[in-house]
Structure formats: structure tokens, C-alpha cells
Image 1 (cartoon, one colour):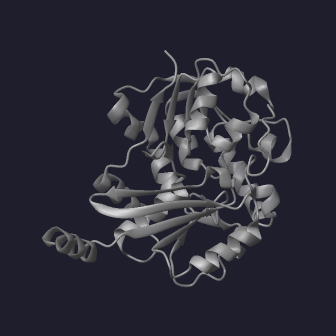
Image 2 (tube, one colour; image 1 turned 90 degrees about the horizontal axis):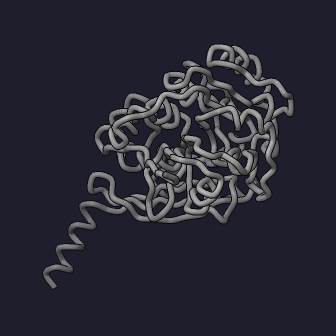
Length: 315
């Protein structure tokens, strides 16, 4: 009886917090786990709607006030370039009825984690190789990642014009890409969810495109949806940095010959979660009941010791 009483007192003093990601991605990737961050118990849950923005909006409304933090998956609410946030209006409509629970989209944590990915990974890997060419299939929402790979690769090729607009024009280097992004983002903010939604949210069929750019890179960095959907069957010996991986994703990369995968977020029970849910987890952990600044997120990364996960897939 005494132990039960003590457990009840412990639960009262340290109640379980909950962070939920409502994602436009596939329901097959859904997962719910309980973790501890610095001894604080949290439930992390990802719920996919398969690209159905109306279903996502209903879920956000239903969960408002019932969980500690919410996050948007599969699309950003804003895209940050420098100190400016460009609104994505179709995504903002999904959360217009959320008034109580803080909502994040992962863009701040994404920048913080991805810009430091090789620094944080080096704690585990000891040494990160230098690369001849990095290929980022889609980088508009991953400026931090482009910045990071620019520090470890002689050349960076970015494929937004190819994969978003079907134009066979790669962009070379961060500076050129930033100039392009500042031109396109005011227009992109008005695009419908059907265009903004990442490939593979509904269609599971791989469709390799622009294979010469995948083959010529020794480092591939970007969203797992793009890698799954558009990369060729042969990725022999390549180094991959990505955002969310399941066991199925890792097996696919192993079959394609990838040597090493760095996932920017930790793995829990066989999979990593997107930065949107991890940012929501940090908001819930903080107890602040509001969104957090990049400085606050950086401090929590150090406090909780969040590190990328590294899998060596082939010898």
C-alpha cells in the first residue's frame, strides 16, 4: 500500500505531459510512445491524415485544450528566411480554431537542430567526413540544413525548382538559393495544400527523378519523403542526413546501399519523430504553455542532451 501511495504522490508532483503532431502524412507512420526527458514523463503521438487538410483541421480543434502542445506535420505554418517568417496560408487555416494549446510547426527547432547536426553528431561519431558534393532535393524549409552541409561539402546542389515545379534547373550554393527563395516564398504562401504536401503523403510508389544528381552526390540531405519517392535504386556508399526514419525507411536505405544515416532527432521504440513533434515535446516539457524562441530551444537541447541518431547500414 505504501508504494502505491508513493506512486500516486509522484504522479501528482510529476504529471504526464502530452504532445501531439497532427500530420498531413500517411496514417501508416503513426506512432505513440511514452518517454522521459530529464525525468519528466511525456507522451508523444503522431496522427496522420493522408493529406486531408479538413480532417487535420477537425483534429486540431478537437485536441485544443486537451493536450500540452500541438504540432503541424507535413507542412509548415511559416517558412523562415533569415529573421523573416513567410506565412503559408493554407496551413494556417488548419489551426484557426486552436485557441488554448500552443501550436508549433517545427521550423524553429528544425533550424536549430539541422544547422548543428554535424556538430551534435560528432559527439557520437567522433569524426564527420568531408564531402565532395551534397544534394538537397528540397531545401526551402531546411535553410539550417543547407547551411550545415555547406560547411562539410565542397559543392551543394539544391533541387527545389526540379521537384516543386518540374524545371530541370538545379540551384548551386546557399547564397543563390536564398536569393531564389526570397523571390518565390511570397507566391508559395498562397499555394494549396495539395501542392505543398510532401510527396508520398498519399502515393507510396517510388518514382526516381533527376537521377544524375543523386548519383553524383556523396552526401544526400533532406526530407525522407523526397528520398523515398525520388531517389534511384542505387545509392551505394552514400551518406544520408534526414529528418524522420522508421525501421522500414532504414531497411529501404540499406537495400539501396546507403552506408550511413544521420537522423536529426532521437529514436524512440524503433523510429524517430519529426522536428515538429519534437518541438512540441520541448514546449510541453518546458511547462511554459507558449511557443519557445530559438535561444530557449538551444538551451533545452543542451539541458536534455538531444542528439541526432546515427545508423551504420553497410560496411
